[in-house]
Image (cartoon, rainbow, N blue to C red):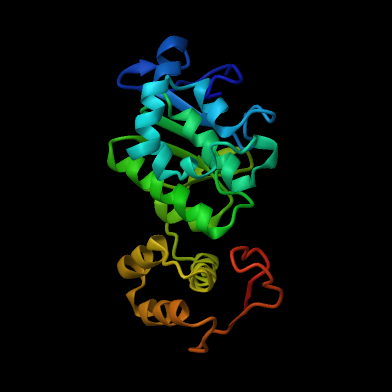
Length: 239
């Protein structure tokens, strides 16, 4: 409804005093939308999909030192969509959605089924978007994305309720697994460090240990039963 895909039968979506549900032209210029299923033309390359949204000059600048470069889209410009990984498609979809420099970005499950490196790239972009004054409305089931949010709401029995506190056991486990998976790829997760430095500094030593080795035992046991691909941590578990 907020993106304009479906028409609401009530309520409002107010930005700068204007109800965007009733001003379609302004909503189109203010809002960028990234659905869960990427709306890309499968037979076209990343470059050709981008050209549907960008003029040549703007796209070149963005690929050199802008949003598209930050998302790493310059690395697969000639790849047709049907040959892309899920992470490539998602990053390309975001790149297309922000071509008109929206002030509000709506994302539906932006990191669903993506590897941790791609999740981190998208997370870094969203941080930059927020730092530049943008508003992000994010629908997610991924606990790793919660530290990105200033306010969290859940829908329970059809009712939107504010959710207080994200220092849950599941979040702690998820962040520990992030550290382990990133250790295997030689990368460090800013999200992991920032969360533990601000919310749970007592576990910083554990996180640093996880980043130095594949697994540690400091009151917590992390193991990797079927980690064939070091960049795919979907099968890692915690106990």
